[in-house]
Length: 499
Ligand code: UDX
Image 1: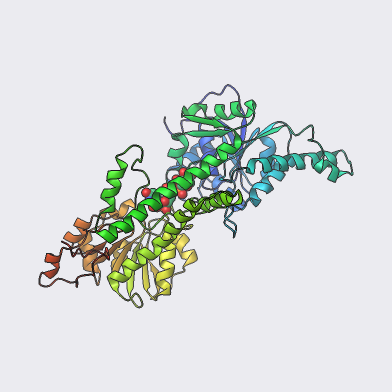
Image 2 (image 1 turned 180 degrees about the vertical axis):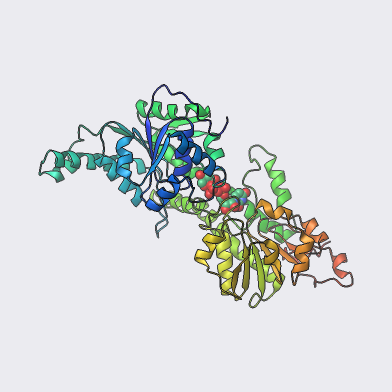
């Protein structure tokens, strides 16, 4: 399917509103618009809306700028900061607002509730309200109740019936003609448009035929597998999907620690696992753990829901624990390489929680930087896109934390280079040139990104995550002029004493 082909004829025209124009809402809005639907996107953040109206995407997402330009030019997409106007203008209202995490790990649904109230007050005809934000199961029933309540209140106010309270608890207002459905998104940052236009499945959760029909029609142009279920089941699919993918990552990270302990190579283990279609190779990359706006908070929210329902979810808690410990596992490798961290100058390649995004939310890199600064290291940092966001959190301080436009500048004079995000551009680094700039050629690869053999050939000491066999052998170590004393057995760092 050609991404963003705008020439689609429609049998029935539903005006779509997308409320919340962030990493989920904006790709969704321009995606539907390029499928030929008229879309009004709304966000309370007027500055963000101004940017979008000017054709600028307020975050880095490959290809989105271009599609935004085309959909704005086509007139099928408009952006407004007047949420009420968008609600009133539309038949289908997608809720794409944030569901950040509360202190107790549960999802904070206050933005969802606020939007539900606004919809209840603006039910000027039938509306299909669609949850697209990631929410715990049963949220739709709360949205339903809230819309009903505020619709009834509105009627009571309009009729000047003083008994507003009664109305709130009273029967449904006759005008409250709406459905609430669930249509979870599975967009990955950095691949959002690909995920929108070529989803591996579309999940539709609806309890009425009308809602099912409308949602199926909205996506009919994509011709992709559809999972049609009741609303609560659809809500659960999203949390379960993210929790399962997180479990896969923590599983392979647990295996990586075993590999470090026994002298095996997790990348080959993952290869051996992934060839089994029941396992598949996806999400079996060991490293410093998962981060981002979704996995950590969705895992906690899912566990919170399970515990609230009295379900044993110790598996999810273990997934979280293994993930949290990745930082310490990585720091141990740094210590094994540079010994005392305090006073060491270290270079860091990659700040974003993963490549192809400028997003640093819950990025493992931040936790590692925090710990290294606490231990007294001086850090030289680089990331192709995420430095502005990182500078907001860690402003540059000369001699302590500095940002560089080139990875080679990061390497200048450092005693170790830490790879934290596997940006493709680091694939093309000249290891020899890097080594010559460094004080000590030690590479600690938090994403198993580099080839240990190449690192060795470039005379680096190399430490990966569960990847023994990367460093020089005992014989090479014993060779005259070798830089490094042998590391103790089982450290898993570059020096392979077993040869
Ligand atoms: C995720 C889900 O993939 C997506 O379906 C959902 O809609 C939103 O959450 P995203 O947060 O963009 O998407 O990131 P994803 O590509 O899934 O990566 C999540 C984290 O896992 C990243 O920190 C990544 O580095 C890490 N990861 C991923 C691994 O450590 N190993 C892997 O093999 C894959």
